[in-house]
Image (cartoon, rainbow, N blue to C red; front, side, top):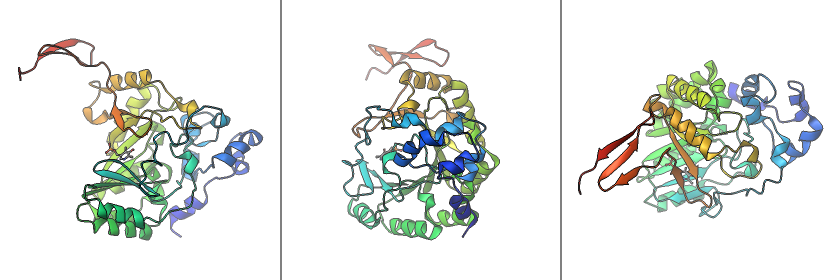
Length: 342
Ligand SMILES: *Cc1c(COP(=O)(O)O)cnc(C)c1O
């Protein structure tokens, strides 16, 4: 076993074990864990400073997950958008291939939390689907976390995908740099490098997650020529304050990760306590735009219910009279801009 596999095996999955590290009410949380499994890597556990802190909220089960929140288990209609199990095809030129159903640390706010640990499906039909659909030029490997697969299995998938002539880019969406940084070995990075153009989108939600270990993991990927993006989920109590989000975005750039999206929390059953208002999300974006580098300013998107797609949200709609646009700058000043007469 490699070192990361030992770390993974040492993850906390039982409440008794968690109680040895932190004060938790085992009795109260047992039904939560029965419904939505828990898994916390030793690295991520180490980042918790105390009950209710931003790391704790993301990984420690909470009785509010069982509240009757009337939210659907699959608000994005991923089942309907799946022409076959494990493949989601919503947009014309790109598909999501679900290559694993688990993660090193199970996030309590996960959009696919009701599917955690479902038996793996064969990726073969998904590969065939992409082969048949010449419009697909971009595949996103997701799950679960694709990097829970051993190097050889992951490479077998990449190899098959790279044989498809019309498939231009491959993306891997993974939280391993944050929760299991050991996973990003030099060996893995060297392997991935053979399948360029390859993009990795990772998932940092709080500045406390930027550690020497996670920074090292990102550096190894970046040194292999992999462009790193970040998707953050807007989470109440974790990163719903402009100061926190700005620090996170700026720090990501220092570890060579480009902020890509801030996601409005999806309306997923068992995650209602993380919901933040769109108004607050817009306030956060307004606090970034113009006040810090454009590089540190991601798109703030709402993934519409029913699988209708992501919509970028911008503070202040553009106003227009005739051919004159009235545009608000980052200081709140409205400035006129004359368009061409065409
Ligand atoms: C978000 C998403 C994508 C990728 O969208 P990009 O905006 O290209 O990053 C593709 N398919 C589905 C189903 C998605 O939810």
